[in-house]
Image (tube, rainbow, N blue to C red; front, top):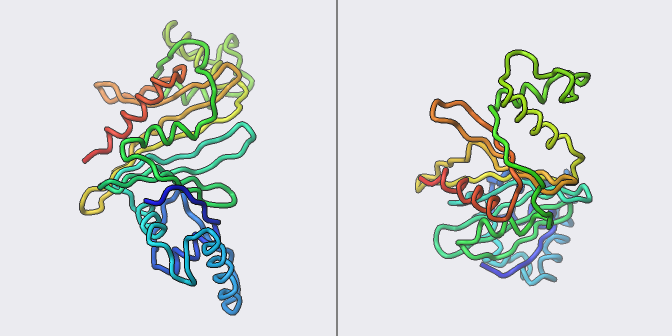
Length: 262
């Protein structure tokens, strides 16, 4: 894989269409603006001029490393993908993918371009974590509550949002009520940023398995919090929110990858 490079959204899509790479990763999906057929050659020339300046094309001949990268990102054998929200309200899509041999890339899509970096095949988790802005772990304790109770609380009437006003009436245990109150205080803090990350893998037949639930993070005034869902032995889903220490966040992403292996 080539080291690092960036390609405008236009040039990326022109190359993709010209070389018949029909499938796109949903996180990296790009659509070329509609143009009249007679105007498309000029659009192509603009794209290939850009690629030539970057050393990625000679005329209309495209660097093989770029084509290999595009093909890998369309159907990765193993990947982490998701969205990262920065504190300036800008968000990007990202895919960290391994080709099943010795190559791996991190691709980041913003409003202007696709930014591609070669990475170590064993460093998918590091690559995704490296995209997150530096934020200390949240101050507080880990909390785990039933997912259905959490969702019911989120959708409660706005007039009853105060944890002391009785929005948890209806037979909740004292401990669950306390846990839910603490969770809601956390998720209602003003947010500076956040995102979610999934894992996926394909078998040799191309069948794709995606993690059922993401690992989510939220950056608040009290620091970064990680959230994830997991089933109990009886199948009930629980949601956990915990201070996102580097060790915990790494562990959760590694666990996410483990769930998709064939």
